[in-house]
Length: 220
Image (cartoon, rainbow, N blue to C red; front, side, top):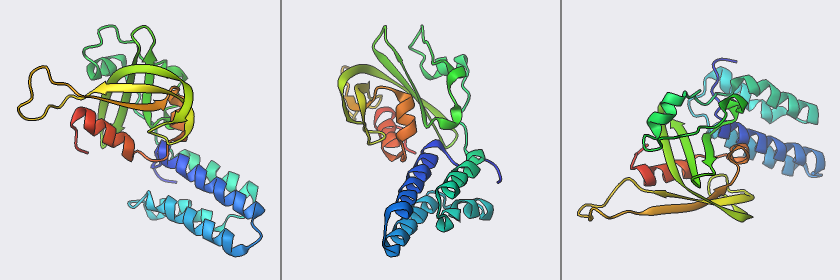
């Protein structure tokens, strides 16, 4: 396989579709049902990579011929080397992303497999804050906000799964024309209390990028 090209959320979707097809192959009595699931899985996977090379496309499209559990496992194993890694950030880079956080304590990056990261998220219990770093189109963006554990399971707005959540509230950096100096707008959403769990679940970054745009004013 050529250079890594599969982002974490994309690999998660590949895993999800592979699991659905494996289940269909093992339980569906009607071959038409299996082929329908197979077509849907292939379509969703290939649609994520419109700029894939012939070699990359061939590696992804192998799902169209898989039948047995060992074949599905080997398919995912063969795609592992194609996973891209999130940027390995230094303390200086993190501080630049959050200049107002004078005593910023970043995550223990030695314990994080950066190939399994869509966004880097960590909390500072002392200040009840969460810090989120996202990378897209060669640009790193940092967002900080208040982190309030909900003490319950609910749907995370980023990964759309039922998990233990917290309310993450960030203040937008943009103001409408003519707004007073005191104007501010806060945007709050429930997201996974554990960022590692969220990164294992997330299969689409559209909501994440929309949230970042609303908070920062960045247009992707």
